[in-house]
Length: 389
Image (cartoon, rainbow, N blue to C red; front, top):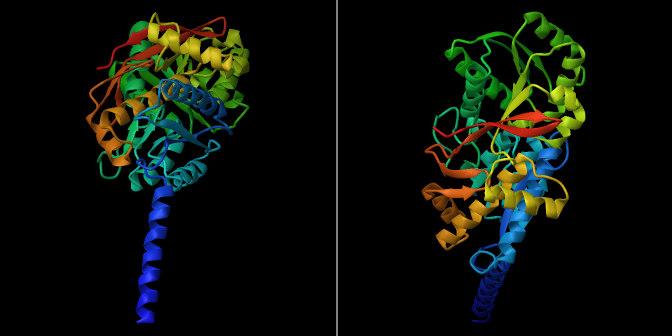
């Protein structure tokens, strides 16, 4: 009998201990906060993007919490640095899962997002990449099936490539394009492919393609080859660090034709690297324009500048929208349960953000307008706006 009593007491103690642990855990009903993770490029080669994104995320959280939070709870950011490396992005994703977050702001760089998404999807944690434009982030390339818990707050590279190809062919009237591609980047390779397809479909010719790698600093050899091809436009779908050096060195060797690229150009650091003169006659596709006559955009820009003493970049705007979008979905669902958030994202009809009105396509991509920006005195200025198809 004494033995039986010991077993009963031990079992009861175990149940009480388990209950205590459950009460202290990360379950959304038991917590005073709603944990949202960020897996961003805070250091490393794309640090300017991640830092801008983090400032946008924090601004959104501050606004939401000041207004009373969501479902009576404050949003808590659990922020990790992926160091601009895919392996680190994957590690950060697993740590966020272990931390008990209910949703994740996935990396902005496509290569990093591609490393993080399988882990988050496997754990059934919904994620939104604010700026990851590679189609494979939301659609499995092997099966062709949509990745259930993965979304993005931006348009995808096929659309971005088509937009720039149309602008180059129709608005600039260019016929012969050379492409200089970052061969270490999924983003750059994908964007070059989609630009080429759209440009040649319009009757244009890609006269040649040359390659470089991230962190390269001397581009004179590949630029000499491109100059010999005599293009009337040069497409460089890379990131601002290398693009700045490419533009500076190209102008120094007498290449005067227009250049263009994608949203990877968007950083104040680009002008610091290239110099204002080198940016004359260059264009890039982007997700919004701070010069657009739009009250929502102006209010965001003013709030960001007041908080950070600098203007926002596109990743700050996209991540700001991502946090507000998640807050809206949680509010509409009446729950911060990860599955209900995922269901809410799938059912979302519309969202109005600073980067435009958007909805999700069947492949979890944002359907929204694209912008073409150019430069004046080293500052990006609005050139054109192309509505979503």
